[in-house]
Length: 548
Image 1 (tube, rainbow, N blue to C red):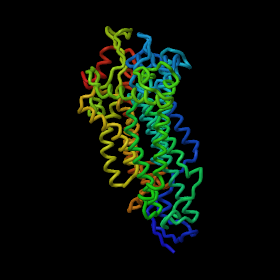
Image 2 (cartoon, one colour):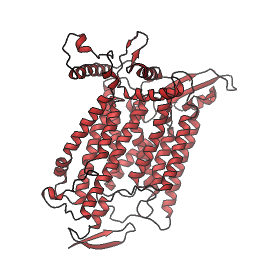
Image 3 (tube, helix red, strand yellow):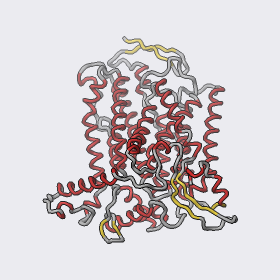
Image 4 (tube, helix red, strand yellow):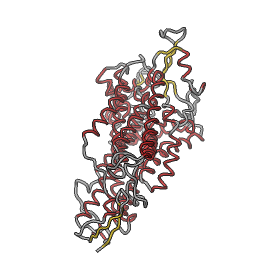
């Protein structure tokens, strides 16, 4: 018989006796492995729908304005149109296959809108607006699952809905909103995978499994429903799609693999496995390898239009250069050559551009990008201005660095799995660009797009800490592997009167979100190209020439 002393959320010590196998499950193991209760609560989905509706209205209303192709729409909207017509990108000027340096999936997604609405502004911007709205939905549900709180989940979604950077990308036919979406979707699938795998261990222990036993007897039985890591494989599909939009998705692959390993080791350690690291590599190694292969296969599938064509760029490179070209293998060799040439282009991209910027400027909003500018139109003033400026909502963006610094401290103090889960993807999306910056490569602000959801998660985490749990956790703190309280509903217990600390924290968090909303409303005209008196436009250029 084993005696387990544990603490309830209210701080009361309890004792339970249990024996294994068949004699129950220690309370401490149950708490460590307890998965998120993902039951479909009607009010949770109602709150989610309200936030998503706000995001959708902001992204779809007036989507056809301004008229014409703005910024890089001149490339991507045109490429999408030619993909519909020919299955490949086409150089209309020279009437030949176009040489492009980004994979085709993002342009195929733009083409979906053009297929539905036609080759016009609504058509080529529709998919970006739809994906931008869906990314808000994804972030809400991911944050809700991570923080065990519908309030915090909706807070994260609302912050993204009110971010000018995300709004502008959601209303423009560029690739980066699709890259952001697929990376966020892959992360969300892995978060669900973490819960499913821990639930598998908990169910097996409740059925009498003793993880401390040596050999294969300490593993949960294989079942198709949860023995196969379906959510992890879905994450691989999403990463393959992200890679099919832009190659920079590759930076996230090792980081996500590392998170999977850490989470699997944590689940085994929480369950009481003797050698969690060894067993993780033995049990999960082939699945991780299979996920890597799946990423590659999905990526190749995004080139299906090029494979099906007979005149795509470099499609017949080996034959054209007098080399043998075997079926299938020859096509792959041609594609490999295409990739070598595209990589050479990216590596040598050092042309100066008026809106180029460096990674250390991005989170400080040091050099936003003007997508559209016009001084034509009536506004009731002697001079007018209409601009679409890719600019993050300042109050939100200027809180990213303090929030991530706080997250480092809180993650270490609490031993909280959520801290590295947020910070490592931020590192994957930022640090490689610092390396390229030292090589003098031309870069732009929108390269930071994939990490924006994770920085919003960092802010949301800190807001949850400020708000505090519904009840104070036990003095000893949460056990290793458990989810410590991160905020409101569902965190740290239920019931009891609201403390003064919690009320003050809620006021602070609510005031912050309100200030973000006010700031967003103030800058909204330059996010959507509204015609303003020149003086009003000028007052929004807070950092002077850096924003012009």
